[in-house]
Image (tube, rainbow, N blue to C red; front, side):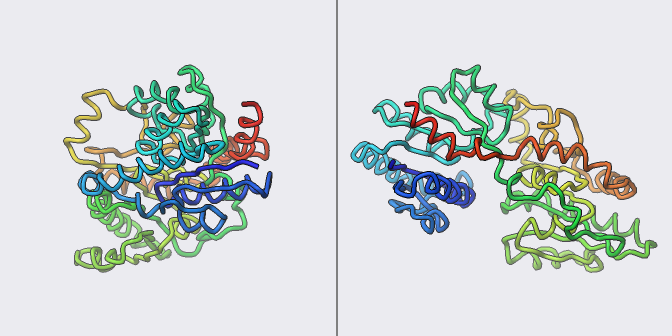
Length: 375
């Protein structure tokens, strides 16, 4: 039996943490869990010292506003862990918070495991130098990461990507337009700032596609996933979009599964679209000042913005980033893609999917068990 302190800082970490706890309990039902948990982790038996909602803040101003409370939680976590000496501290993502705790605990002889490698290979590569002093074992979602970390002197294992395990490889029997309506998914982002930068240009793109295909016998439907109840209001505030057939969904998967084409901002949604084997266009815009800093200070280490292109090593999905993010160019690319046989996308995306799937031997729980047994 082991006592694990598991710490998630966001809802996505709560999902990963719940799966990890469930898998560890299958190995040994007597394992004990405590830490910072969300409702899913609590349901799996994690005793919450604090809850994920206590840490979930977004934006610089929000972080600054809540910084004293977050630092207080950080201090309490360190004191609790030093007091009870768990068999391992498992930080799930949320790197700025977890890595700072892990560094202190590792110096105190407590085993530290970090789940979800920070994307040092994409930007701020210098961060990787700090991993060795904080982490005994890094659990990675992408197969190329352990080798890169090995060069930094960090022990790391690939555990598979949760989206690859969740989404079926063969989606031939799943919903698609099948010569009925033409469905185009628009994914402007989950944060309000992203929506501010992406939504209007995406809707302008939709309008151009609608006009181009107006003579088609197919009805063109545009689907948008969002957690914002105000989305309808934002769209309807522009009179020029009133003729567009737009459907709003709560979940990204609801939009992707039945789509013929996806236009998405860069981020995890690009990988999700790839795993659903969808023809995809990737876009992204940030503030000109932020983009200037990232490019001029050489903080970005990759040639592509989207995960599928990074994993495949070439621009499989066309990208329209920053000044290239223009409705006219995106709509032209969309019309071109809609004329292509979607089956041409299957082989490379299926291979990508297969490379990201976990196995019984590669699960986080299996790696953690082997690591503790060998320590």
